[in-house]
Length: 289
Ligand code: UTP
Image (cartoon, rainbow, N blue to C red; front, top):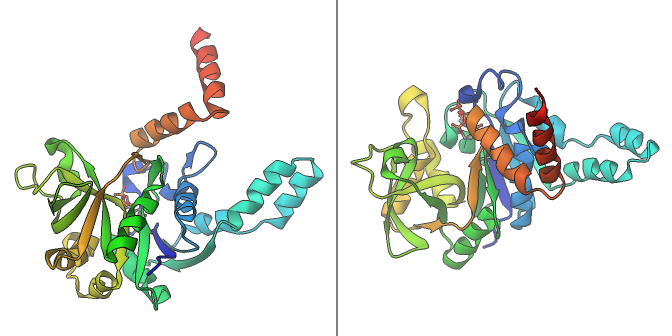
């Protein structure tokens, strides 16, 4: 069973990053020289994914526009001698087979995946990547999960350790075994520090089996009418068919102003071209009165 299709939920409102995200989709904020969502799709392609279903929302047309081919722009760049830039622009549209579906109301992550489900018929399992978390490391995070899925053929979650005091912001896994590949025996959405079953938070990459996809429409809506993905995963985990991978590498968030600023600094700092240019510019600025 080879997983070749990815779901990219990008239908949220991005309220924690307002007012920047009033008209600009959160997934389109630039990190280094490209929008956040492009980093996510590149990670997926590097992990062997060939097709992606992007779940957008009304008013988020910029996402589709970014991945559309633009022969007129390419031609202008070529006529100006910017052949390399023209090639980079062209390669965005050729990244992988992309399909789009709209989530008409932001009813949660589980609901976003449910919106993509009609385009997932015939898939035994799919990958899911939240584009507001960038992965920096090797092998790609999605590849680390897909490797575990290829061995065990079941649902796989990405796990990261957090101090107890900050774990309440996340879904948390109850696990068995020594890791780095754990058996996930239960999942709890945003538990208090005292009730958290472990310090392993569930992060924005998943491989979901057909069993989880089929359970999504049985999930009862929770607070705000939201359908949580963790609710669809819970029974499958309790039945012993979910693994969790404590991954290698860093995951950088762009969902708030301060996290986006820090992620840009982290990515640009290590870039061989942008890094020295940024440091030079900062030195110049600091020398100014
Ligand atoms: P977040 O919860 O981080 O995004 O979801 P959000 O809801 O847009 O942000 P805030 O909390 O209002 O600031 C992670 C990913 O899931 C998508 C988001 O677009 C983001 O890429 N998502 C979230 C959906 O596709 N649909 C939803 O209903 C909620």
